[in-house]
Image 1 (cartoon, rainbow, N blue to C red):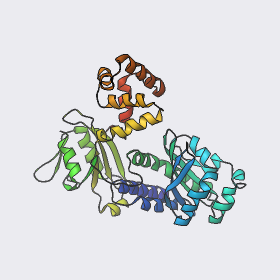
Image 2 (cartoon, one colour; image 1 turned 180 degrees about the horizontal axis):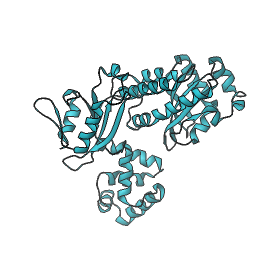
Image 3 (tube, one colour; image 1 turned 120 degrees about the vertical axis):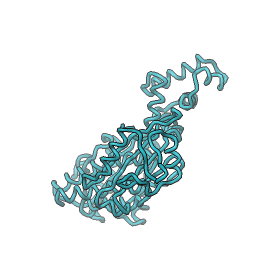
Image 4 (cartoon, rainbow, N blue to C red; image 1 turned 30 degrees about the horizontal axis):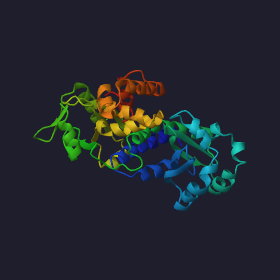
Amino acid sequence: MQARDMSQQTDALIDLVYAAIFGEASWQSFMEHSRSLIPNGQTVLVLHDRASGTGAFALAGGLDEGLVRRYNREYFAINPWTDHALIRPLRKVMQADEMLPREQLLRTQFYHEYLRPQDVVTGLGVTLSREQDRHCFFSIVGCDADEEHMEGAKRAIAKLVPHLSRAFESRKVPLPVADASSGTLRIDALLKVIAADQNALAMIDETEALSVNSLGRLCCRDADLLRILQQVLAGTTEGPVVHHGHLKRRDGALPLRACIFRPGRRGGDIFGGMDCVIRLSNPARSLQDAARAFCRMHRLSGAEANIVEALINGLSLDQIAAGRGTSTDTVRTQLKNVYMKSGCHRQADIVRHVAVMTGPTDPI
């Protein structure tokens, strides 16, 4: 595949990622289209729990249901690539031969019983998420291709990684179901609102940066955000354009997250046009989930986890102690344990780390 074709295909896959996030297409569509990156491609999104030794294909492209069930039931436990996937650098795309020499793979039961019947001998993989003992991998396997083709496919997946990671971190994989913590609106080149759900309109009311006037036009009072919107709507590139950032809220609560997206030329067919799509989300509503993830990651005890969740809710150490019927000194001791386990040094560090775990933090 020529470099230009590979680049155009990568842009189309990025469009599909955001189409899935925004509910315009299914994740299965992304999995099927990404198969063509290498010959005889089969794509999988794997969720693995290292503590229990269990794992399964959460999504698969190019595999029938029988093969998926057989892998989950029989072959996951003997997949020689798994151990390497658990320790490879996070979000670094690696070829199968970099993780396990080909001659060793060809001697395994996994190759002879599972891979060879499907004409699979190599592939590319990346670890998207690593949270304590839970891992998420995206992989594509297939038959051999020349070195130039595999390098091109490797670059393509590397370009996809930040978008897939954001989707996973925002809990949009594999089921991108809208909830009260997010909303979407579409605007045209003149900033006219083409469509908006109730969640998006409610969030716009929470910020001074955006409003919708009586003519249905989006008004932006944030100079930096307006500049980005104008650049995105100008459509000077053929590929998709993505910006992530934050919008201040009137009440001083955690800023809203904003994802500004314009599909590429090919992605316009998926979205029904080249309009700009804005996804707003409220990180405060996912803080409790992030706090629990933070506690699991650092293996905090129940009492220590209770302190983290209380800090997230804005309580002081004295208030935490009073609520638990213990002394403030006891709470301070447990807080020191949290610092030691997590590497944080202040209460503000804990709150910041938890907030970061709710999703992307790229500035606009």
